[in-house]
Structure formats: structure tokens, C-alpha cells
Length: 379
Image 1: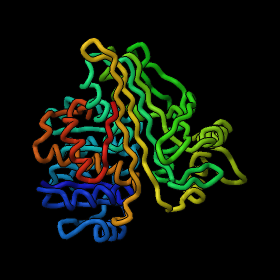
Image 2: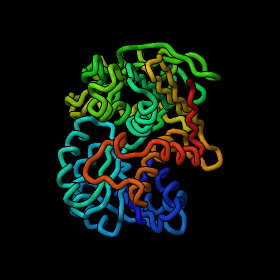
Image 3: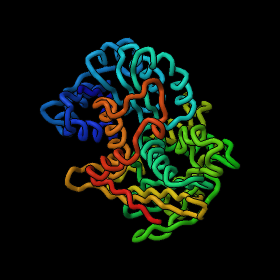
């Protein structure tokens, strides 16, 4: 199979690394607006089956033409391009997967279900970490119950050593981070979708060997789960894990408008506060220090008439051998696995499909384990 990756950023690099070493992949094409960067990343993270070329993700016709030579495509660029890239993939009849993160864009993609079916392709949005991997883990756990009363999903990407004042470092795009903290949050309550405000619902939790942490509501992590499990799971929510104190400090900055897209005038220049805030975050929170990813899904319900509780947990640390951060591994390896599963015929459904429906969980978990991302199950 031949798989294209659009975007040479951190997540694109890890996807290229994984796919270039995957069984049955004959070519990995890396595309980026910066051709020199694409060539450099292809050399550093790929191998002799990896090629690189320039592409403008905004140009649907150009993208469609480039994808004609590929069986599948992964979008590793910011979510705002995914609607157009999905249309280009349908036009070129190329399976398509992305890292998602924005509910509005995902809804637009599901509106293309009929077109994707007619093109004979599979489109699966939101295939990163969260949204992404956790949706497949959710499906795995739910299958272990006769009835699920609650599913609580907690996920965080953190520096291994917190650095004040925010106790955080940039582990993915600043736009994606602000979006998670800014957009409405969808949960299930009494079996029905409900919207709550981001950066609320603060709770304290612990992980062995790491200590006390906090978790709070953020947008996008539940992805399609509230729709898929409406009326099936009574309560389902998603919170992001951070070191203590982060939520209060960051929320204050957003409350005074630093996440706004409404332009303000500064002297003779008009700027969006969010654009300035993004650059400040990138400049001051990019430490390139070792990171870790924490995942915990807590299921409660009944099995054979008896109460049952199940916990899925991941503690993943940066891979010093490859130089891939934990966030790169835990975000990009899942989408690479899903793309490979479709390309190799292990996923045969067509159209725009939620991954908790499309992906066979145990095979997926086995593929994670092969990449040293280990799911620990506690009963």
C-alpha cells in the first residue's frame, strides 16, 4: 500500500516514522507547503521508501491530484484544513484519516458520508490520542459489560518535570491547545448529550509514581462517543490532566480575552488576541524537555447482574532512542495504525465512520503494544 502524510510538523514526523517501517507499506509520501522541510523530515524520520514534495493544503484540486497515486492519506495539519482535505480525498478516491480536534469540522465531514461511500473510501476523523485512541479503548471496555453506567476518560500530555508558572510545555500545536480550552464540551448525562463549559469540573487525581494532578473539562476529547453511546451509557465525560494550578492560571488568561478571534487595534496595527497569545505560548512554553502521556478510562456498570468496575491505564514516556516525544507517539501511532488497517483490508466499512465502530479494539491494542504503548487493565 502507498500512504500519504500531509504536514511535516511533530505529528506528521511520527506518522512518517511509523508508516515507513510498517509491514506491507511500499511508499510513504510526505507533503508540506515547505518543500525543503518535507525533504529534511523525510530523510530524518523516514527511510528508502519515503518521498517528499510540496503541497498547498488549501488547494483541493492540487491535493486531489497528488493523492491519486496513494491508497490512503493522513492529515497531520491543523484541523481547519480537514474539511477541504476530506473533499479532495473523496475526489481522488483515497482513504482519509486525520487528528481532528474540532467538533464543528467533524460534523461537516460526516455530512460527506454518502459521497465517501459512492467513492468507495473510508474516512475516519479524530484518530489521534484524544480524540482518537481513547475512543477505541472506550469501545473495548464497553464490550466487557452488559450495561455501562458511567465512563470517565482522563488524558494528559505533560512535561516529566513541571516548570512554573503553568507547569506545562507545548507538546502539540498552540491552536489545538487553545481550541480545547475554549470550545464547548459535550458529555453524556442521563444517557443524553449535554454541553458544559470548558475548564470547569476541576477534580484532583493521582497516578502512581507521578503524584497529585488535576483534571478539568476540555473540548473535543469525546469526539463521536456521545452520539455512538447515547442511550447506552448513562454518563460519559472527558477531562484533560494537568499539574495542579494550571487550570486556574490558564483560564484567567482566556477570561480576559486572550483566546478571542475578535480583532483589537494596537497603535496602527489590527491583531487577533488569539494569534498573539499563540506566539507567546510557543515562544515561552517550548522547552523540548522529556514528556509523558497519561491515559485513564474508568468504566462502571454491571456484568451478569453483578456490579463491575474496570480501569484502562497508560503511562507512556518519551522514547529517548528515536527522539519521538510521548505525545508524538501516542497521537500519531494510532492514526498510522488505523490507516494501515484500512489499507491492509482489516477495516472494510466505507463512508465516514466513527473509529469506535470501525476499529476492532483488541487488534488495535495489540498494535499499540508492538509500539511499546502498553494498556494496563485493572479490575
